[in-house]
Image (cartoon, rainbow over all chains, first blue to last red; front, side, top):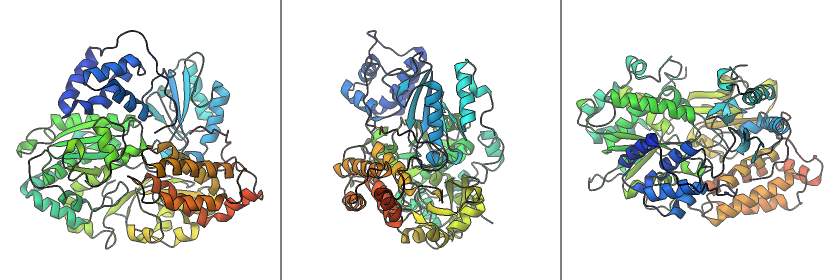
Length: 182
Length: 435
């Protein structure tokens, strides 16, 4: 249970799964014996579709699965990966647990704060980057590391991190460059 | 020569694809499996001595035998791929490089116990392992190794991948079950145990990825061959995730019964940059810590490590060198448990929070002379008093770091040591306090 507060956001517009997610949702209903068990996978679909979970999206998931909205809100609040506010285009999740701290994640935090001008839990004004410190991501053999753009960035150094951030800033895809070597 | 059981195919190119896996002997154990009676398979796994590799080390065959034989309710398998214990990164390698071994193991378990539905609960952050596993499962369905009437055997096993969403506590087996049911992952009081009332109110086996992945080898080579490796009570091999201040961190498979430090040194090349060894955390961050002397003089098996007060746990070995601040290390460990406490049991919710608060102020140079004993007095009230072992996982390291390195804590309180801003000379701490 994380201690952070979840700010709820509403769009004022109704939410519904698009055709692809509706098909995925229908398949999910056949894979579990209870509708409630579909809450997490359905929230994933909603979050992938909209980028974060709005009040409307959570209410929609609750309604489709015949759950009370509050039970769905409670689930969203419990899990750190469900976002109730928009995150940056590049959401930097820097690991701060033991091995990553031993191997220099504090330097990387300094680099992010200096280069982007934001601290943990913040977002750049242009919406390009958000930054959070997270607990162990299971990549201790390649520490220090971070997760960004749905992938891991491992064996980081200050220099490598700076190049990754620069690539994102300039609109290049850092995945196309070999940052995991050297 | 260390036998390779789990990591045998890790370096085979394209082993994550069905074609390569099956060309190299994958799925061959099923022929033998389907010729055996399910109860005989359980006996075989019991005889192998295989124990759960997720952390608790419970004998796998015995766990299966607790499932009622009657068929009045469906039975379920939950594969625990919610790898989250700090320092552990071995299931990730299995998922990425040998996902079909996991699927083959799932079929073995399901056949033995009479299960038709398996869920693989994978942690939400594991994007790449999830992609590999998803692709492998699609192949398995296409090739007839999942779904109805597997390879004409009359055995049905449906497998569903369930993605977690970021909560360490879902690695606890009943936390995982609650989460799979669509709730907050707050562990359940036991009894009833999952074998009787598990997911969806039905008998459930919860096994770790590595445990399940050992099954094809055991079926192919026999329980006796597996049991011949290791020690009398710690049989077979285990994947050890070795990280921290070593030359070559990584996942190394080892047989039980070898000297702990020898194994670390031979696998990783020893302490990074020729520094001196200060301490070893042998079984994930919830384990007690071992001093350099202890680490050099203990055998790597469940019983020998347990005799020191530490544990083999999930096989996550973290190495701390002479430059590491033990006070800061404990602060980082306790911050983790305070962050991950699910909040339902007061001894855990309050205990993890206060242990972290106190060690934080010691490290920040604001410690009080009574703080060391205050921390030690909190720990016993967190042991064995909660629904799951998360509180214990904070209290055990707290008590052991303080008892074995008390001088470091006292020096920081008395001012003999400057407040520690860094865990290691490698970094600059910017005083981020938010849990």
